[in-house]
Structure formats: C-alpha cells, structure tokens
Amino acid sequence: MLEAAEISFTISEYDRHLSGDGELRDFGREAAEALGLSTDEVFKTLIVVSETGELIVAVLPVSCQMSMKLVAAAASVKKVSMCDPSVAERSSGYVVGGISPLGQRRQLRTMIDESAELFDTVYVSGGRRGLDIGLAPADLIRVLDATVAPITA
Image 1 (cartoon, rainbow, N blue to C red):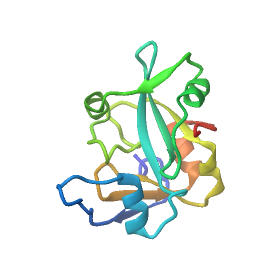
Image 2 (cartoon, rainbow, N blue to C red):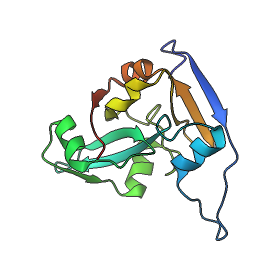
Image 3 (tube, rainbow, N blue to C red):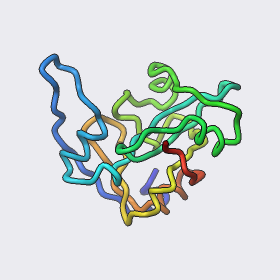
Image 4 (cartoon, rainbow, N blue to C red):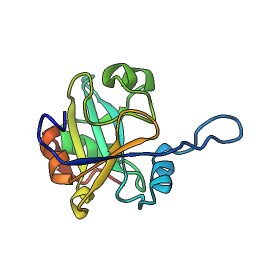
C-alpha cells in the first residue's frame, strides 16, 4: 500500500517479551521499549463501533487513553464503543496486538490523534506483533484519508 502510494517508510522488527504465564503485556509499550522510542511517537490502532454499527479506526499514542466521546465527535456520530476483538480481527485481517491502520481488508474511516503531527516520524503496527512501520505523519494521514482530531483523554 505504501509502496504503491510512493511513500517512504521504515520497517522495524523486534522480539516480543512474554510474561511468565505466556501472555503478552501491553503491545504498544512493548514496541516502544524494544525499539528505543518514546511512547508518544508509537501509535496504537484501535477499532471502535458506532451506534449504527459502523467500524471506525482510531490511531493514537500508546502513552494515551482513547476518549470515546472525542472519537465520536471526530467521526460525527453520537457514540462509539470498543469493537469486539474477534470482529476487529475479521474486519482488519490482522490479530489483536498487530492490527495496522494500513492495508486492512477494507479501508475504514480513520481518526488519527492530532499529536501525530508533532513528530517527524510516527510508528504504527506493521500488521503483526513484533513489526512496526515508521513514516511521516502527513503520509499516514494522506494514505488513509484520515481525519486528524484530538481523540485522547
């Protein structure tokens, strides 16, 4: 998708660290730590669902909490709630913890937190756990035809 749009990007892979019970801790924080990046420049991809059933992608720093009210306002809908993980996986084609805003099975409306514009490069999941893509925020916004808005609490 990025190559077709002639967008410059980097790919960063890292080893995932499992907790003692075999479960992964916070995927985004783990990515930032493994890549030596700030949790403000590594962005997580969350999928929410509106009251009408529309799936919407929210991309925000791993250091922040998503505001459902602000995402709804940015999307011009009454309210949103977290999408069921299995629905998010089926819709995107990716597994939870590796959901990328890029290259989903079908492109959904996307809201990107305004803080992305503070950085020369932001990092998003590359479509699997342990893989991140770094690119200019303006390129991410353009290729996703995303809305930029305050969406964090």
